[in-house]
Image (cartoon, rainbow, N blue to C red; front, side, top):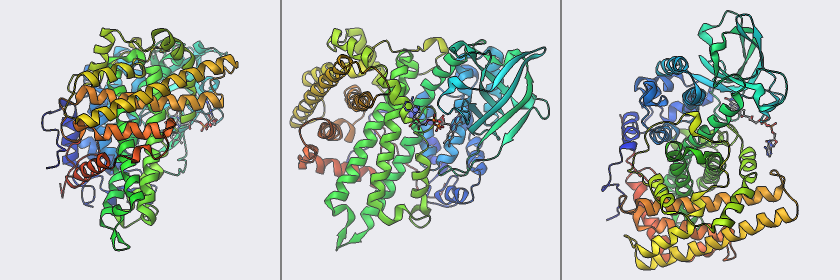
Amino acid sequence: MLMTEVDRLDLPTWRKAQELEQHLGDPRVAANPLSCHTTVNFDEGDEFPQKSVDALSDVGFFNYLVPEKFAGAMASPTELMALTRVVSRRDLTTAIAIGQTFLGALPVWLGGSDEQTALQSSHVRSAHLGCLALTEKGHGSDVMSSEVVAEPHADGLCVSGEKWLINNGTRGTTLSLLVRSKPGTGMDTLSLLLIDKETLSDGATKPVEKIPTHGIRGADISGIRFVDCVVPESVVMGGVGGGFELMVKTLQISRIMATGFSLGASDSAIRLALDFAIDRQIYGASVVDIPAARFSLIGCLLDQFMAESVALITTRAITLQPSRLTLWSAITKYYVPVTSEKIVRDSGVVLGARHYIREDHWSGLFQKLMRDNAVVSLFDGSTAVNLGLIAGQLNMLVAARTKSHGHLEPEQRDELLALATLDQADTGFPRADDLELSNNGHDEILDSLGWLAEKIAAEPGDEDEDLRQLLLEEIALLLLERDKLDAAVRDLNLAKDFKPTSEARFELAKRYCQLFAAASAILIWVANRDTINGMFSSGEWLELMLARINSELSEVGVSHWMQNKVVIERLWQQFLGLYHDEKMFSIVPFALAKGVR
Ligand SMILES: Cc1cc2nc3c(=O)[nH]c(=O)nc-3n(C[C@H](O)[C@H](O)[C@H](O)COP(=O)(O)OP(=O)(O)OC[C@H]3O[C@@H](n4cnc5c(N)ncnc54)[C@H](O)[C@@H]3O)c2cc1C
């Protein structure tokens, strides 16, 4: 029998997501909320999916955007991430509109006063949309050049200027708004304000018209113009001049949480492609019998598990190791959306003509999710911005590892296991003081490779002996690649190439992320193989995933991962098991909804 159930483990963190999944019903049934038919129709009309937002509001979804300590229902960020994936696999427009409300509330959860958290909590729990308004047309990612100003006024502050390309910019009731609160260019010249539009005088703001977009076409992507808008000084969050730091810390969390959109979208991409490929008969056989198509689909599943490993660990780090998020959030925001885009591309190749058609297969959902998914790597710091953040930390990371030789102290190992063990609680939500502005060279996840190999060698689990040996061989190759990466960074320093945006450093940052993803997947497996059984614990996915990374990074050759036909066939059968049993393509493969709700 194919074992795909999580039958030895009931993970409380995923309970709400499973309930929501069952409540929403099969997305192929047009009458169900957030069905493919509904979401594609909203998209065709460039129409905001209010009906879908209302359907989620009716089941209390907005309460999960508010941490429990602020009178909400979110027990942990991981719980919200799981819920987001359930929505995102159906409709990214809706997921991102609601996700932006969480993003807008984040500075308040991190740095707001008691009054501000109470106000924001009340708005969000009432399903009032919100937004984070950083971007200006003239400056894009260069937020230090912001021109929206808040000047001293007899009644507090007078705000003027325009924010542009803002999700929920018009529909949002509240905004976390980045302003220049004193002239100059230093970090202390920026402040973050919590603006409640309901309290502003008439004419103090003007909406910027909806901006037509390639994907999430129904979303309210617009902006807001402030015209001598007077607000009390009590709207400032985290102190006057503290806006830059609060924004940076906000983005450390939002960059991780945004990857729930990507993981939901790529689950659907794989499902739509596999669904088609199994049924489609050409040349007298099924598309899945064409080796290249089958390998593409297996590659998609491996990519999904790898991206998920990163997201699962770093989401738990929001509460368990918040001081590490400067690096880990940038890696997550670079790696997961880019990998998800690759999954969507590769699934699209298998789907062929149907990936391009706006009807028919799953009501034409694929072309919508493909366009929608591409936005995730743009906002909250684009792919380039995040690679720059990683590249900028390479020197410190390599210097620290050169000194420690990747050795971890026993308490660091315990912390890593707690971070990755999915049935251990990660409840709570951090405040701004728990987060840092630099990792100071610390990355215990990538450092853990050597220790993980020792642990796998010393503590056999459900995997068979041959597979365990293969895993150890792949980890040995990864350790060599990590050494090569460290040496390459030192060489750049010798060549006086210090610029974080240099081409060479960007390439090394990408490699760093691949190695980090591999370490995350191994860590997740080691920490959970005794509790999550079946496909997860037997480990074929991990062996093939590591072999595939080594095919890309090392000199073993591109076909290295395709050699072990026995392991590939076992994984293929497990993959089909997940599909036929209608389970999420996930390390936590819970049951998807069937039929009419
Ligand atoms: C649909 C959508 C919704 C959005 N919603 C919001 C929102 O709600 N709130 C909000 O504040 N903003 C939002 N944005 C704005 C988004 O965050 C911007 O796209 C972002 O600020 C980048 O601006 P830009 O594309 O003008 O690029 P620019 O900053 O002008 O950069 C241009 C190019 O320069 C390169 N580059 C820039 N910085 C770096 C770097 N550090 N290292 C290396 N290369 C670099 C990149 O190739 C980049 O594409 C949204 C954008 C979109 C498309």
